[in-house]
Each structure stands twice: as structure tokens, then as C-alpha cells.
Length: 177
Image 1 (tube, one colour):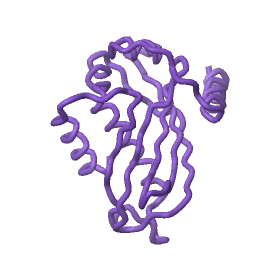
Image 2: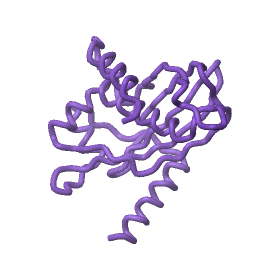
Image 3: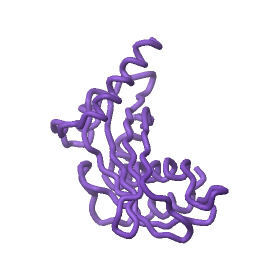
């Protein structure tokens, strides 16, 4: 991972946190645009946004305790889909925060929304869908994951873009089966 120092900071923060957070809480990372985050056009490169959403997922997993639970069971999170929308560019040394929230789940798919905020305005958003891969191709559902975490519950309603993306993922998987 090319964001090692940011990841280390997230891991240490989670390690020393007194309490775990709930999976439906907003999980926030505060950081800034580093000089190495730039592309030749002078603003944060598109790929860096996606890399930072990976950090948002790691922060979520460390803070909620899902990392420990999933590792114990041999479950690995796999990003299946991510769609980024950009509204404003960011430049060095601009400060921003990434807000990550699990918005719901459907079968094996877990849905997250990431929001990049700087100076009080939304800079970019990401719609991310992940699933868990189990040992020996075990099918891991979101309900299994929630049960393992000791918090079985129904999913909040998903909005149409997530439902459409999940339908597309299912269609793609069926066509490759």
C-alpha cells in the first residue's frame, strides 16, 4: 500500500481507542493532500481518492472490531465495485476529511458511502460495494458477518444506485459462472 504512514496512523488510533464504534456510525479520517498525492496537472490524482477510500475501509474495520473477527474466521474483504464522483479538486497542502459509512447490505454484498469534505463542502463521493471471501471459496453473507460480530440486524434500505450496481454485479457473476 502506497499510503503506509497514513495506514499506520489509523491502526495506532484504533488500537488506543477506548471503545469500538458501531458498524452504522460515520467513521472519519482527517488528513491533508500530500505533495506525492498530485498528478502532473497539480491536483490530487484520481487514483489517490480510491486509495484513500481503502484507508476508510481499514479505519472502519479496525474501529468496529470487524478486522479481528474476520481474520479469526479467515474472511477477506474484497472490493467488488467502486464509483467515484468528483465535484472539486484538491491541492497540496489542503486539509480534508474522509467520512466512511456502511449504508446497508444485500446477500453477500456490503455497501459503503465515502464522502470527501474540505472547507465545509463535499469534494468527492464514492459508492463502494464489497463482499467477504471465505476459506476454500466459502460463501459469506452479510448476515453471517453480522452474526459473528454479535449484532444481527436488518439492512437499512439501499438507494437505487446501490441496488442497480448489485444487480449488475450479480448479472456479471452469473455470466462468468
